[in-house]
Amino acid sequence: MYDFLADLDEYFCEKYANYDRLCILPGYVMPTMQRSEVRADGRTYAYTLPADTMNLAKQEKKVELLAELKKRMVDITFSFSFKPNGWFRQIANRFRKITPKKTLASLLEKYGVSAQEALEGLSISEEIWTGICKGKFNPTKNLIFSLALVLHFSFEDTELLLAVCDYELDYTLVKDVVIAYLLTSKVYNADMVQAALTEYKVDNLFIKNA
Image (cartoon, rainbow, N blue to C red; front, side, top):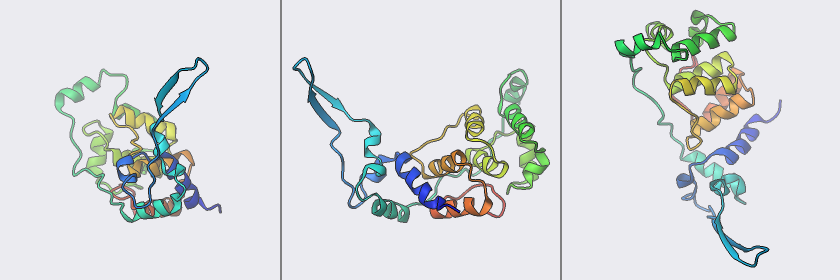
């Protein structure tokens, strides 16, 4: 088995974009973002380097910096409840071609999983899950991540469901970077997923026994 955690570390160093948290790490060397050059016409042009110049991957001591960052990680990406769709929204959704309910149903069918089978891998009440499947509630971002890992959704299908529910992957968030790695690398093995979540202190998902 390849050392997927080392691979995850490399991916994280490339993708994590919360520069406010990175630049305060002891030993982080802030790159010079403003540059200038003399071009063929003899003029001096000033330009700013792209933000990803500040990524951990470009730091000489990235291993030590990542280790320090991991010590400071705390997952606060959670929601207290599932916000119900109002009656008018539920009626309007019946006439829309693309809705969270329809997209979720389409993905369950695509992956050959019934709603009941999907529930078996989730730590969520049957009442809430039934409400989500009927369009009474929209899935939270954490639930979408949980579904993707439990049902082996592709990265593209996960992005689709996120977008339909008005979410997107945010690479300034540790959780989003870790989930993106697992999906793009097709890491769905339960033990490996748990190892990744534990390594990066990712919590508040709805994966049963996670």
